[in-house]
Amino acid sequence: MSKWNMIDPETLESNTFHLIGKEWMLVTAGTENKVNTMTASWGGLGIMWAKNVAFVVIRPQRYTKEFIDTNDTFSLTFFNEGFKKELGYLGSISGRDEDKIAKANLTVTHMNGTPCFEEGKLVLICKKLFAQVLSADSFIDKSLIDNYYPNEDFHTLYIVEVQNAYKKES
Image (cartoon, rainbow, N blue to C red; front, side):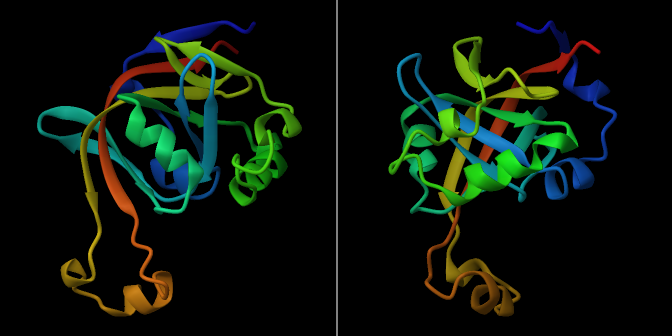
């Protein structure tokens, strides 16, 4: 097992636009016995309610959403660029249909009781603070609905506190 160092989330040096939008992340939740994950390239990091937070959006049909909704915490795991194939696979296959984590050859580990991935380079352990389904009435730019929600399967927005951050030792 690799050496992980706990770091202050405020010391993250990565460009979050690149980290989330280009490198992607795995959103992972579950228990010691059952875990699911999904790839995400939408979200953000910031400050809300005087806390370090992450913003994550998940569509209702995603299997991972069931795990997010039934657990108090989940993780965001970021990887080196060599994992793009695995992340693409994990974002396109449902964990309902197969053991996609095993097929991607990734290793689940737990930090503070929350599942994440040993192969990652950065892990954020997040505690849910807020969840709300996006609604058509809330969109000011209505073209976003046509472009991203033709089936009206609006994401649930989760605002989560970043409780711990871990960086893999180089």
